[in-house]
Structures are given as C-alpha cells and as structure tokens.
Image (cartoon, rainbow over all chains, first blue to last red; front, top):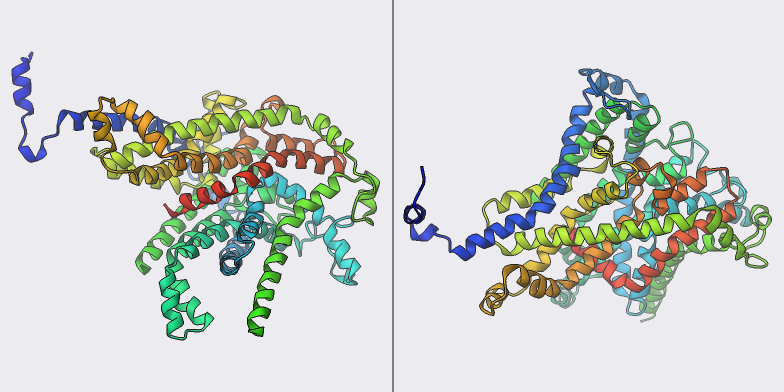
Length: 311
Length: 274
C-alpha cells in the first residue's frame, strides 16, 4: 500500500508536548551518526572479545588453527588444580596492598608536602611524575641494572657504608624478589595518585582553612577536619585506580623477573599470558581470565558502590 | 619562629630526597650507558673516565632502533588521530544533542571502561587471528584506538558540555550547517580537551606493551617497546649497549614530557575525575 504525502504528514502529528522540530530530529540523526564509529570499534574490539573470552573458556584452542572444540568445564577443572595460578593470585595481593596502603599514603603525603611549599612546586611535581611516563620495558632495564647482584648500585652503596650483610641478589633471591618487584612498582606508580591529590588539594576552599585558623585549629586538626573530608572523592577514585592497576600488573613483572625465581613473583596476568602463549592452552588461559577478570570487575563495582554510599 | 624555620627546612629536605629518588634511576641509567663494559662490570667508579658515545651508535644499529622508533611514531600518530576523531564525535553527541537512548549509551561507555585487559587480551588475540590482523599495522592501530575511546569520549564530553549553550543556534542562524558548526566552531573551542586527550593517549600508546607483545612477531613491524625486549632477550648484548638503547627509546618521551608537563598533568586530572 502506498501512502500519499498528505496522509504521511497526518500520521506524524503528535501531541504538542512530544513533537520534535525537524531541526531536532535532524540533530538526533546526527547524534547516532557521530556515535557510530565509536560504537562499532568498541563492539568489535572490546565487547565481542569480552564475550568471546567466556565462550573460549569452555573450548580448546591451540592459538593457530581455525578449529575450536567445546570441552565443557574441563578448563575450569584444570585451572582449579593449577597451583601456580592460585599462588599468583596471592602474590598479586602484595602488589594490591602495597599500592592501596603504601602507594596511597605516599601519594597523599607528598601532595600535602608539595602543596605547602612556595618555591619549586612545578619542579617537584615534574620530578615526581617523571617515572610515570616510562614504559614497563624502560622500568625493567633501569631496575635490573640498579638491583644487579655485583655491579648494581644498591649493593655497592650497601657495601660502601659497611652494610654488606644486607646485600642481596634482589631479583633472584626467593626471599627478596617479590618485595623488590613490588617496591619498583610503587616507585613507578605513586606519581599518578600524587598528581590527582595535588589537584584536589588546590581545590580545597581557602576560607575553610581561614575559619579553622580562627578557631585555633592545629595542623593535624586542619588536615583531619578540613583537608581529609574535602579530599574523600579524590581518595576514592585514586585508591580504586591504584588498586586495579596494581592487581593488573604485568609488564613490570614480566620484564624484571618473568615470574621467577620459581614462580615467586608470578602474577595472574603473566600466568594467563604464559598459559596461552607458552603452553598453547588458550582455553584454560581464557578460564583464568574469566575468573580473574570477573573478580576485578566485581571489586571495581563494590568499591564504586561503597564510595558512593559513603557520600 | 625557629620551629617554623626548622619545619620548612625539614619539608624541603623531604621533598629533595623524594626528587632524588624519582630522578636517580634515570641518571644512573644514563651514566651506565656511557661507560665501557669493563668499567661497568668492575663497578668501582661512579662516572665514566671518558663518555663512550659510541655505545649509542652501536645500540642504534645492533638494536635496530632505526626500524622500531619510526614504527612507534607511526602507531602513536595514527592511533592518536583516530582516538581524537572518534571520541570527539562521540563526546559531542553525548554532551550537546538530545537523543533517545543517551543514558544507555553513557552507561555502556562506563561499563566498557571497567572491562580489564587481563579479562580480554586472550580473546582479543583470537579475534585478531581470525580477522588476519596479527602482524598488521592496521590491526594494532585499530585495537589501540578502541582501547582509548571510552575514557577519551568521556573527557571530551566534559569539555563540550562546558561550552556556552546557544553556540549551535547562533551558528545555524548564520547559515552554518550542523557539521560545519561542529568542525569550525565547536572543535576549536574544545582545544584544551583535544590536547589533554592527545597528550595522555599519546603517552599510553607509545608505552603500550602487552598487545604489542601478543600481536607481533615480525621484527619489521614492532614498536620500540616490543623491539627493545627482542634486543634484550636476543644473543645477550652487553649491558652498556642495552642501557644506551633504552636511553634512546626513552629520550623522545622525556623531552616531550618536560615540554608538555603542564598538559600531561591536566590530562591526568581530567581523565580521572570523570
């Protein structure tokens, strides 16, 4: 059935409140066109793989052939008994706690300190964030050189001041490898939180401090009752991003120790990578990434929910 | 008064100590890169007797940096341009146009952002194999662009939303088409946002490692981070040459950072607050 122009117009008549002008309709179309490239790219390269990871975790794939076959739950059963994967989950908690507690405290403390000085603010800010622009490969080269057993400057310094008892083969001694890599990670990442805290501090209204001064508040009281509450939203986002970043650590570890010695510094993302690309078991690697990735997503949602409720 | 002075001195002491801590590893890498092998392994001297600039020549040729660095430049420039185009369009739609499903699209962007890399890089690799996009410049750039979109679109949305309300109407009255208004009026006004996104994403792409590790095994296509790791794990090159190669790879970033540190700082803040 063909509809004549006049009837078509009549069909479109709507109550005045819901009518959209032709201009508004054209702009609506423009919105969809403008969103299209982002939607397509995200669908193909981010969303599909996320779903695919779940599918792949019930399949077997060698990484090359076009054939995948369903194997039911056997990948998950396999992962349940992979002790290296589970100890990697424990190891990464060291990174998580170090980042969340020490990293956060260091970032906040240094931001408060820089915010209090008058001269050299820009210099300190630039210096403190410098490590943040390095790649993991650069970090790896830098610190395997600094922490080298014989020629490394750390051991030389310790020897120089008569503390040769404290010298270690930092990255290859099972007792020191994990703390050493976690320390490097902290050094690498604390500048990020520092920048955000510093920006947050500069936004705290000056009048609040003036009022606190009038009340004769001590430095600590000013921090506790003015700075800290005002910074809470920043603290929430910094701690979430630091925690998630720490739990996803990969390159720093891969380049410095590759998980060694004897899996003492193994972390989940590295384990997933090895399971796929070294052991050619992409199915169980996918199962690991579903377990670990799912835990990360839950953690992020829990954290967002908690910090929203607190406000 | 005296206590205040001492406190101030202590504060500066602390800050200088932290600055030394932040800068020293880079300085030490540079010193090591200028020593001879025997100086390096003897480990007695702090400074090279005579700076070995030839280490840098050796590093450049043996480390194939003449291939990897241009590759990194290509990937960084193309991915940043892609991210800017796609995310400014999406951000504009979200900030300044009323359309059905806007809340759902915004929510989807936030949801995509919390998908962590460890959850999807295996399946991303599989997808790229199926599409024939491993060992492909195009494939690597496409995946980098899509990784950068969500946060960049949200940053751009923030910058667009802060522009005066009736810009579009005024331009329309002057006879400018919607597309023309976007390109000629809106985008230039959102320049600080574009710069923040370009700077942050540029650093992220230059330093990207995991996907480059997974997607490339052809030497000629590798970006510098991946290529450098190749060099490290190859036929055990000498430490001072490795340090020199690392220094060359990091030099563009450090120079960029020193000149653009204000924009870097701004970019970090605008990205995280959203």
